[in-house]
Amino acid sequence: MTDTDTFLRDTLASTRVIAVVGFSPDPDRPSHGVARYLQQQGYRVIPVNPGQAGKTALGETVVARLSDIAGDVPVDMVNIFRKPEAVPAIVEEAIAHLPHLRTVWMQIGVAHEGAALTAREAGLAVVENRCPKIEIPRLFAGASPLAGA
Image 1 (cartoon, rainbow, N blue to C red):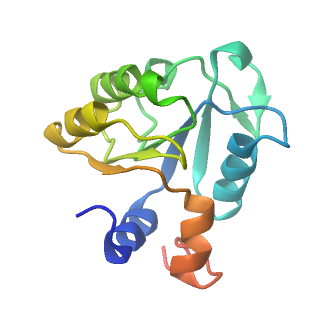
Image 2 (cartoon, rainbow, N blue to C red):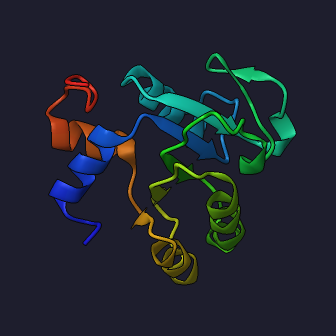
């Protein structure tokens, strides 16, 4: 079950690289704030936004699509900040192009039963309608999940 605290804690502690799909360069947007927070926790964050591709954000080059992430970058998690109807294509692209992927994480307000099933059938863990910026402080009492890494 992917919504237990134990599962969430283990997932966040074992993740190192997160692609944030729907990243915004606007610091007032939730996707920017969550990406920055994840980076502050010690994760490498790859911003994904076709309108910002090639620019630098949070010290990383923004890519247009998941398939544009260099093959030697071991993305563990895709964190999705897009409307639910966009999720199936994102999941399919992630499965096709991210060989190290272990988790598809959909932000608060984002869920898609069909895409979740596709991801699970591909052997991926799925988290829907949750935010790591909320879960990390709740599960790790203010410490970084990577503190012991």
